[in-house]
Image 1 (tube, protein in one colour):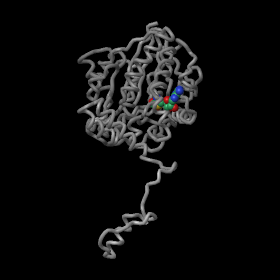
Image 2 (cartoon, helix red, strand yellow):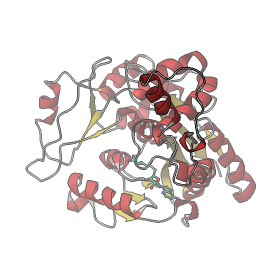
Image 3 (tube, helix red, strand yellow):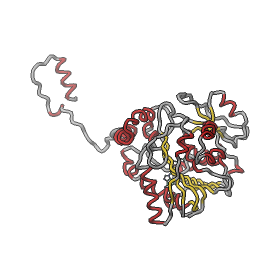
Image 4 (cartoon, helix red, strand yellow):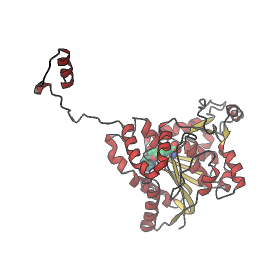
Length: 374
Ligand SMILES: C[S@@+](CC[C@H](N)C(=O)[O-])C[C@H]1O[C@@H](n2cnc3c(N)ncnc32)[C@H](O)[C@@H]1O
């Protein structure tokens, strides 16, 4: 029996005066090896409160509420599905194509994204600001392909920033489960290399490709799926565009899900090593792209250590270790063009960061574009 319940019993029995509690009734907390401790989401929130309140100052409370609230989705239209009425049906829900809106904004103040935006074939519907309605599940078209893919609309920004053209060879280095891969396929390119080190996640990616992409577009000459370690990438100077959508602390996932939570007690070392892994993946991307080609580095964390610091570290190492020189490209126009749809952080030293906020609860999404010079 615990000391407290013993005390309660004695008071019920109306025992007065000092009470001696025998040793055997004293409660002592046991720190056995089986003690599990606070859950992953709780540890994640503690960590974010400590680090992000310093990083974001007054902005953190509103970002925190956004992160803890339900995320908003966009519907990436599958142009391969062959259905004509998807746009009409979705339009009746009150959604609009945020890229079309961005084109209108861009016409007023043309910038470096103009060309990418004009030539992009991506269509993605989103509900208006402040509207938290959900999309119905995608239907299968008569061709047996799903009509749209639901994803965080901000995750299309790295694909748009890549500015993929039909003559390009493109590498998606960390691709599973495949949202950005599908967007890259909508853009059309000569060849797409799709890679992810995780076999189970790559199998999920393969299932996504089967559900969205017709077999004639999945031939080996145009699309290759590999499960290699991206840090050991062997191909040098082969691609015109490389997307490095790196593994990270996946801030939103970590706050909401216990499973596969990188803040769990058993994954401390893995979490601490993330910036190193990210730096090596970005290094591989910089080596795999041709001189004059572009690499986009992206994550879904707010952490400066995993974003700006990784970019700076990889740029330094690429030059000193491999003689690969690259420079950061200005993406301010992304912020200007898409500010109607997303909330951007205004104080990013390098790259751009979409901040979750209740009015437009997308992100976090960090992106930085690098051009290899030599
Ligand atoms: C942020 S997720 C990618 C999300 C994906 N781009 C999308 O849009 O659906 C990061 C991915 O990196 C993969 N990954 C982790 N370490 C890797 C490595 N060394 N090489 C290649 N991929 C790796 C993980 O398996 C995970 O699927």
